[in-house]
Image 1 (cartoon, rainbow, N blue to C red):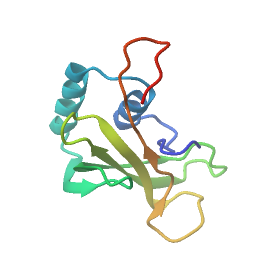
Image 2 (cartoon, rainbow, N blue to C red):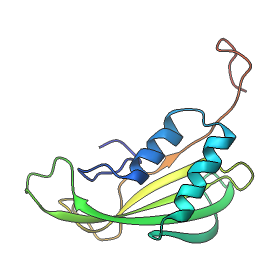
Image 3 (cartoon, one colour):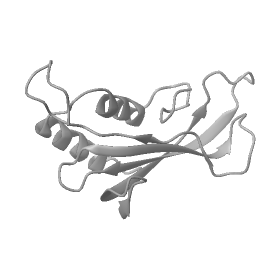
Length: 133
């Protein structure tokens, strides 16, 4: 499992959104549409203002999902994962994502257990041969 990714076998809307946010530049209108979609889902809870691990302020939301883990040798064993997403308060861009195991799964250790933490940064440049500053 790569850091910051959903460990559940069946991909979810939230895993897909996190993957798109972290894998490409997202235009402001698309960011706004994604945030509206998150806001429309009853399972998404606004945690409130927070500061990510790099000290950047922004609102955080959490989503809790239950499902079978990828690669788990025990067929059908369920786990509960809570995803925390932190957004830039100015732009709505995703700053950080952390899946946290709340229950189940084969991972040893006390619960809650962080399954990885991904910090994201985005910079626009004028051309493909220009390096970000």
